[in-house]
Image 1 (spheres, rainbow, N blue to C red):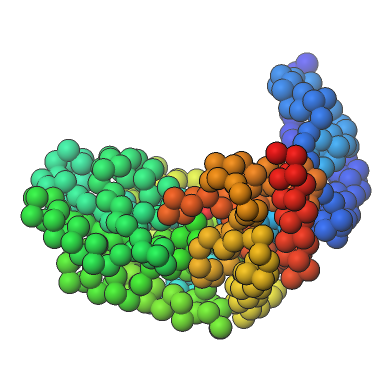
Image 2 (image 1 turned 30 degrees about the vertical axis):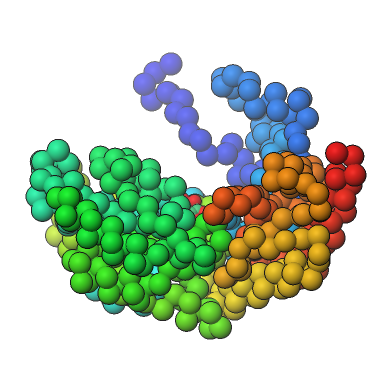
Length: 487
Ligand SMILES: Cc1ncc(COP(=O)(O)O)c(C=O)c1O
């Protein structure tokens, strides 16, 4: 073969017509999948032969795309986690949306790398960050970045806080050069990602001082003040208050205005973990609950939760844009900006740890344009009202016991027949969770709040109807009765 006859390969389809026909089928199937989501079991256990298909070695030879898709349709689509189902209320998820899914497809087709540059996707990325700032009442001069989710959003904010409050150039000299050990404060209800952040930032878990929460699961302000004073007296350097706007256990929202004041008085960074609740700021009936969030130095929020963007997309916003850039910006020559052309645009990688970044903004942008922010706000109000509705069902039923005050959309309760001790009640309630899952009726989770084990229902779902909650209560009572009868 001569040089000119070299066969050059590509990943493009051999036939665009065939690819088009198959793609149309995928879209039709995808719409069917969503249209019928309510009728399918939420979750089901995978047969061994399906499981085995995910343990085969890397394929070395080709297969027609139609064959690959058949495998996806048979082994992937019937066995989802289930969080797009109207009766999924476990942990804290979002329920995704079709427009967001189309956007993820188009983002991949357009293919841009959001590390930066002068192109439309970068402007959309920056616009979504600006919209997030607007949603939580931050000024236009603040900065922000889209990341994989709330954990990384919190990590970036705490990274900036650490560098600003360290008293030395941490980027240059490292945490070992910090004179007095830094202290960060959060309630004992704070999400575990803050512990991970402390560890990753080289400060260690002990640098995160957990302050007791009160009966309302909000941080005890007097205990916080006392802890700050005590730490100062011991030569430690109080650096940052991490407020929870929506705790993961019960949805409690710390007293943000007072925490902002304490942070200002004490010269501390004020960070709000708003992964659950920051977006309540757009909900007309409930936005009062997060008043004060606009005073924070930084806020972590999660569009893949209450904006229902398909996973993943989180966002951090930071009031002091210079501090934000100063924490992450580096300019190696191979990424140097140019006066004109593609490299003349802003380098978005200056605002975080990633260099290459996905086009996760489009799914937020398209869904917001389609539905408008007001509808997302109403959906948040709807979930909070559903939380109250479920609470009223629990309170009306003698065999159910509310275990924590319902603040927003998280309801903690348990099935409690007479005559069982705490261990037996816990075992019974866990069995209820498992049967609900195995029967495909509902997916819920559990937790322990102030030493009390309970079922936990987090209604962060735009497909949930009140009749779903009626069904949940009916099924818990039925299963609870059946399980208790044979124990
Ligand atoms: C209060 C809170 N913070 C942080 C996170 C972590 O967010 P992500 O799962 O998006 O990383 C969560 C997750 O549910 C959360 O509830």
